[in-house]
Length: 365
Image 1 (cartoon, rainbow, N blue to C red):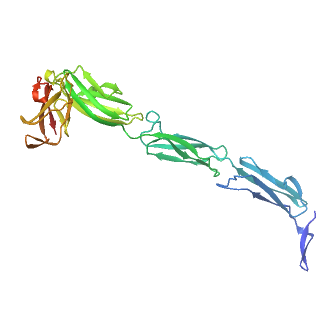
Image 2: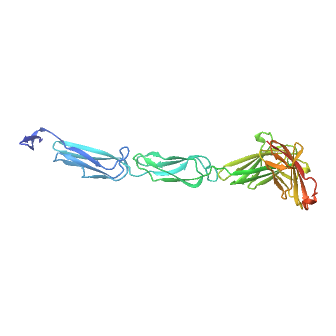
Image 3: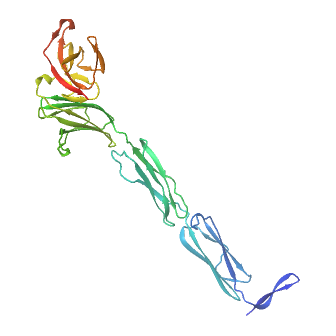
């Protein structure tokens, strides 16, 4: 076997026979872009450096080895020999240059009509065939209201590749409809209800005898109207009604009122407020229009004393908080009031009145 030693002669290095035996030394040089966890995200080039000269390549060791496909671990190797022995060296390449594929969803289904009406969380999930998913976006949303609201999110794989933003479109409405002017008036074995609902898709009316258990409640109306007459009731028995307006998204607004049906014919022309209503502000007095009546006379009593007389021409009259009657100032304070109604015919100066159309009480609480 040949051996060589390095002799130093006047500063020059030469190889000469000696006792040192060295097989080739093989060193790989890997070139490429890395990002996270040692993964390459670009094409990878492997070059080999072999020393000393005079070796023979047994396998591999091409001037450059290029890895262009995603791989969880490709092993490249170089084997070379010389007169003193055989050496090998290898490099394991993990390459993932492909971003994850992503889908977006919410943590729950819409509440109604494709709308969400309370906070949700949009989540993104991904699939990555090579390095696997490291993380994905999660975004809560709680308003404002709107349609076609685009939330965007991404996923990142373990190699550091980030997907393109993926939208999740939300229709959001957390604002209930506006429910006003809920009234109930008594009739013979019946109750007449009216309301105004803005922004509602439907209105439901639930009835229960006052003081009854919730299980005794019944839905007596469901629709899109603004009034309903409930019949088949018991005179003298008080009923409580809950009027609920619901919009397309499932938001609801509710109001309740109570009424006691009355068989007394003297009240059948009076509409609202309902008999024995408890109110917090001056009511609008309403009654049925009387054929050929030119005007009406409304009188208001407190503790048996008349405190107001008015002559409206239309079948309604708005009470005020403060007014003057016969030179005295009156205030609609907390008390029980009774109002009476007559129809007038011809000119007011003729004083032609029909019979009493009705009388009813209400309380300002």
